Image 1 (cartoon, rainbow, N blue to C red):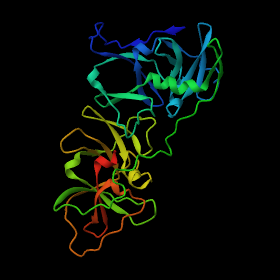
Image 2 (spheres, rainbow, N blue to C red; image 1 turned 60 degrees about the horizontal axis):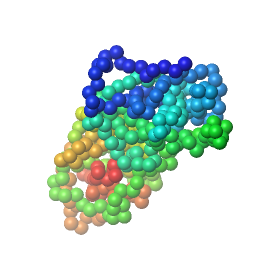
Image 3 (cartoon, rainbow, N blue to C red; image 1 turned 90 degrees about the vertical axis):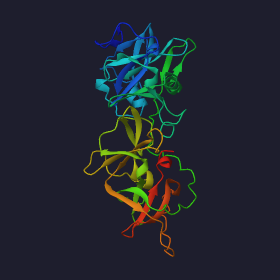
Image 4 (cartoon, rainbow, N blue to C red; image 1 turned 180 degrees about the vertical axis):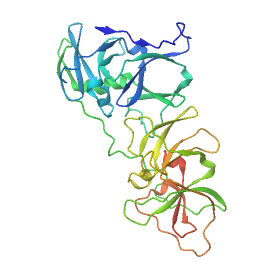
Length: 349
């Protein structure tokens, strides 16, 4: 038997006309939502039923025509917990016909969201046309990801074979989405050599990183004017289908910001994990404008003023694996080691 979408006990019976209605649920450790007008029902699944094919949770009987139900966590490339997926949200296509079900981990609830609460996800980590994510909603420290119903249907459709009468005749295994080999795009100006720092440029020094080619390590630095806050590391919210250097999302002062493993972005090798001793988060953004993102670094060394190299000082060689477009300067630190002055905007480009 199907059930109605659960309602929060504190919801008002009167909903302002300019608000959006969403159905909220969890899957694979993340919080997600779909527009309420695309979710006609929530159904109870038989947890003991065998999976019809990889990535599918069930064939739920609806109007004498079995309805394919996909494991949403599997579709998103997240960790799946089949035993907890006792319910499924049914999904309408654009015509209003029920097309698929999505197995989720808890009882969905209806929530209301003001239009100005919806935030676009950065195209650098969620490329349009390559993701099923539509937007995010931030409420205090919570991040809710709104799914694109049409993109979900388009992803499921190739694995469903239907007969002339529209009935499902075969479910083929779903292809698990993986971004393990994905990389953020090369920064603009990747082929140019970074110049010297400006006179008395004030920067925040970060812990050294080691290049992937085995060459000597270097010390990254960020212009202090671009740093909004330095804080202790904390777990990031789930962001499926993002490049591996993007560890998730952080809610900060009403913004939904991608968390970037800086060492991974610079060298291709994962850096210190979130929550490890000494790890810090740097919220960065242009001096005038909205914050851009969050850098996970293994440590912060302090503030210094950089100066151009002395006349006749030999140029330092740049590691071949380091994308020069991510830097605004490549110079020597006070201890003689190489220092990379980062271009924060390029890191998230």
